Length: 432
Image (cartoon, rainbow, N blue to C red; front, side, top):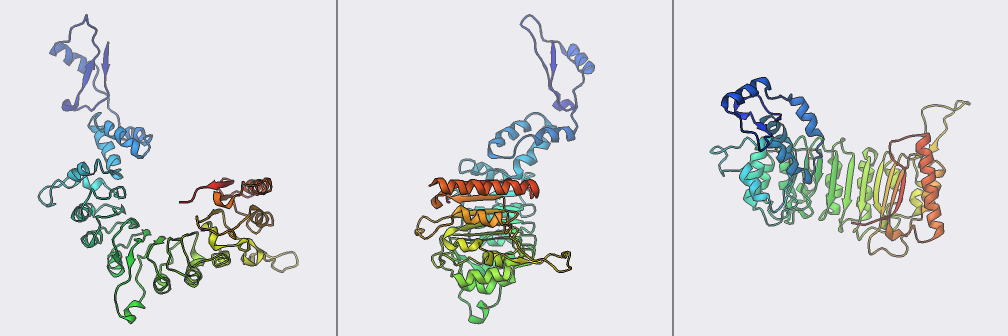
């Protein structure tokens, strides 16, 4: 019985395997040729191979599977290799081999590799002391024409890396949050001025104000024109929020401010007054030592179009969900008597309440206040509420019943008015 493997039709790739019993002899050359002519190698169109490979999930555990696919034949090699290198999962153990593959020579014009154009996402976040500053810059230089997402390593990103980064004109996501060294803001924004396609930016946690004149420090930085998501952390100051956040583009929809211990309430409120109407997702997390309970109770008024809110309960009180802090909406239609009927509603769909380890006993957002806001129609689109275990929603039967009532209301609303978010109440969320 002869078993034919699926392979390419070219002679150099033909791989005819025969399952021969011990009593049979291997065919001679004439017999082999006759079998090949009678049963020519089967050919799979590239479209079919692409469909087969689409069932392989793109995750770290799949790297070995994709590598195995490259060994089947040339057709599978050409189809699997772009998937294997599109988003390589780099670890300290495989980083050296990756560098040897992408940068076989320090001089790009001496020895090129056809694999470098396949890399579109480079995540070096798992590396600490495995790379060097010059090597990071060299990698960015080799990938500058095709890289779209980059996560910088902790200790091997320096000034020379910015020069290479500025040439990555197709960059869409830039994550500098892990960098431990202090980064000059002027140097950072000089680099960002070349990244016109950038959509998501994670600010470095150790950014530093430059020693410039008073007049120079009052000139807002120019942000990438397509920026839609900005994540601030670490060394951000009140001066930065007041001066440079006003020049953010109209495309901004997502804002995250966390671990900014130097900023005060008035600066956060100022940012929300400037950007609030365009925001769809907002995160404000501890530690922020200068913010207190009730600091952000008017947040929903400042962000009338917000769909997802993640906030530390340390900065709000139950008044956040009271009628006076819900926007007043006047519908376009009119009532039977010809007058418009205003309503107090907010389109919030997802609410995550966190709580810092150092929160005082006064920090308390019970489930019944959110239930009342949803039941009375002030939060008609609310579907997901996830709460830190530190808020103890499961501590008593009354709290558990209120949380259950909240879930029931949200489930009913999703049936009546679907928004595409599964109704859930989770009161054991861990804090990160």
